Image (cartoon, rainbow, N blue to C red; front, side, top):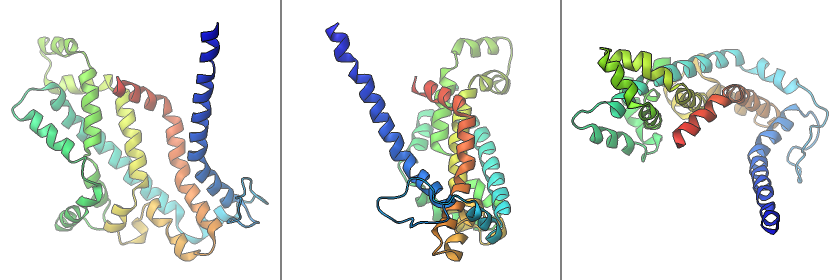
Length: 275
């Protein structure tokens, strides 16, 4: 009985800690939402305002009047979709032989792929931009998408996923005469759906929020993604923090919707990757 009583506070402390971390993560976004829908009050007051004063959607309407929001949104959706689509295909094709095939230099190739994780992505900007320029892909969606379709993290996660598939299943398919392509496409790939969903969600967030590389490659505003185009608000409304906050909220909301809609698959993939 005494041992049970002593153990009761531990879950409570864990929930309190998790709630505190959740509040710390949520507060910046909530403050931005409050700023975006407020029409009165000093947004820089201390202590800050936690509830909107005179709520209004005028700031959101102003965003649509000032910048081509729908055009930026369309560009972001197109770039994100193509990036995630090709990343899932190409990284799967790279991860499968590393996980299930035996060939000379396999460990060396995988080690070199992992070594790229040590370097920040900004290190590759110069080389990538020179390559994109030589290929005449500046100011194109392909120029934005191409350097991001292969990442070491995605290959690592999918390699782990392929290794979780029972070897007996693959051997049985080979005995039945199935080719490696058939095994990959019709047997193994459908079994790693949760991992594919995890990589897809992470890649979606990364591609949607990417700012530096599209800003470097693109110079025509009509081709800007939302992450770059919304910065026009900073120049046009440098003193109107509420309008800038409204544009920021509109940039974040699609990713929140995607994560909430695919949360079940994401958690299953993370659970499988941890195991």
